[in-house]
Image (cartoon, one colour):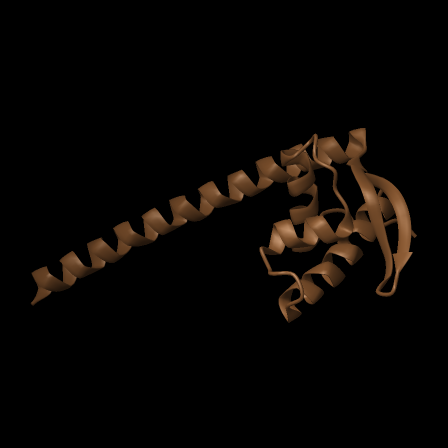
Length: 127
């Protein structure tokens, strides 16, 4: 069974974080803290690590990331995470897709503001 195309929010965050810091040494724990901005030892950090572990595994399964598998008291995690060539391509596509989505949302918001202004003006003229 082939993995489904596209990325969930956690996978996208891992891809983009790794792409934006190409010379960084990435591991499951450091990525989780960089992405979530959670403080070490908090429940938020524990949740972020779990989500990042799963996202890393999914990206490895898709052939977009490679790394060295390790194990500790919390289970399997990865060190020396690197994007593969296909992972770099996917990160670029994801970045561009997110930028296009942001632009579309901004344009929709501007259009909504213009419509609201026209409706308010029509109401004022009707009174």
